Amino acid sequence: MRKSWLLFSQTVTLLLAAYFVVATLQPQWVNRQALGNAISVIEAPAGSAGGAAPAGSFAAAAKAASAAVVSINTSKAAARHPNMDDPWFKFFFGDQGGSSEPQVGLGSGVIVSPNGYILTNNHVVEGADDIEVILNDTRRAKAKVIGTDPETDLAILKIELDKLPIIVLGSSDTAQVGDPVLAIGNPFGVGQTVTSGIVSALGRNQLGINTFENFIQTDAAINPGNSGGALVDTQGRLLGINTAIYSRSGGSMGIGFAIPVSTGKQVLESILKDGQVTRGWIGVEPQDLSPELAETFGLKPGALNGGGVIITGVLQNGPAAQAGIMPGDVILDVAGQPVRTVSELLTAVAALKPGVSAPVGLLRKDKKNQVAVVPGTRQRPQTRRP
Image 1 (spheres, one colour):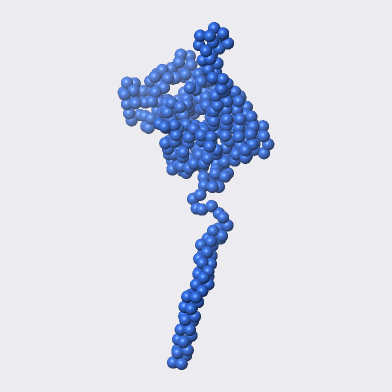
Image 2 (cartoon, rainbow, N blue to C red; image 1 turned 30 degrees about the vertical axis):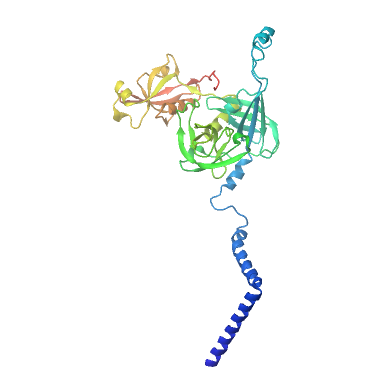
């Protein structure tokens, strides 16, 4: 036993001595082997993953949606003074009748149909004489305006190209505050850009942007040029059309607004079917219910159960008047949909089909009632967006 131990000790001593000599005289031999081991350890995880995106990456969603997001360039002939051709006007005022250079604009859009239909903002194409669409694959095409809806600030364009990528429509009705989202567009004309954020709020209204407001608010960066672009979920499905920002500088401050895809789909279907968006109208003057108004009209606070919209005026011989609705009535629901604000009432009534009777739930002097209203057709606004 002692002899074996002595032999083992001598062997180890000789090996250590040999290693010391090699490390001293040829250190590169030892370092090359160590470096090889280190490289194999560092590269192994990447190789084993096969180049997959890291956890938490939105690369797949961005790739799925980006191909269907387009840039939109518009131009409008410069306005000329009506007296520019009068030689006396030129003699006294010179060439002050306006620039001869056309006005150009920039925006984004989303291809929603293989037939070439594009959803964008009305303010992107309003008044444009020439509209050019640039796809993410660099193809270009002239676009035709199929229809517009200024009250939601949406417009439908059409291009004639083959093999168009289309975006998958998501469900804005199931979106929740805190959901991660991506905004895709062409800010400032720098090229297609993807930014990320979350859904900051839902149902934003009374912002004074559109007549019908039900915005998705997000902190994903939205800048000039993003208007009409896509707000998508983490699967690359369309949730909304980016339309406006709150900003003191003109750039993103983390408060952006998108029109829900549910509204966009409704506008698209109406324009393709009827050539315009047809909305219901009942002829009332509503106000949000405040404690002061409730007291004025003799309403007990406990009878409201969570809100309603009080009617302060009714158009004579209008649909509401013919159904028996009177000033002082509180509208609780329209066609089964609860209403708590004027904005919600406006949206619910607009969704009604003109000429088709719909139930309206009322509260009159602390007693609930239901009447049948046959809505008329809401007239399109005559004024243009400033």
